[in-house]
Amino acid sequence: MFRQLDDFLASWKEETSKTLEIFNAIPDAAMKTAVTPEHRDLRRLAWHLVESLIEMPGHCGLKIAGAQLIQGMFIGEPPATMKAISDAYAAASASLVEGLKAWKNADLEILDELYGEHWKRGFTLFVLLTHQTHHRGQMTVLMRQAGLKVPGIYGPAKEGWAAYGMEAPKV
Image 1 (tube, rainbow, N blue to C red):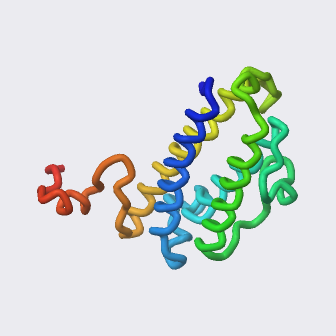
Image 2 (cartoon, rainbow, N blue to C red):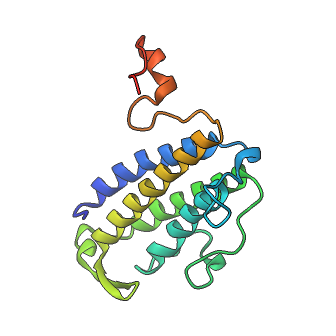
Image 3 (tube, rainbow, N blue to C red):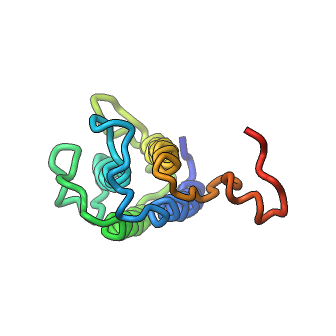
């Protein structure tokens, strides 16, 4: 749970860049990659991150860019291109950062109702961040299945070891 807005904002800035790096590594031709037709594909997972970024802070009174698109907890059909998804994510992220300028650290202790529970705002921001990380992990697996190069987010991906003059670890 976050207790200082600056801590969240520093983490969010870093994580936003990592999310955009993943989005930008997915060509439109690979957007339909899914484990099975009954599971979210790369396009839907990326769009879900946009939805969550708009929907979740809305429960805390923040009006995030794109909020008019939310119906219930979800937005309709995702855009047809990764660029459009990436642009929507970047706009929503900037909107979140702007909206948080009105908050004070004490506001992180305020309880809001989310999903039938009462969450402190500092916890909501924590969940927003970790939820995004969770789905990015799913996306990297699908990217591998699609034969795409996976960016090294928290360290080198298999292909990234060469940049360090090292051989990738044995599998």
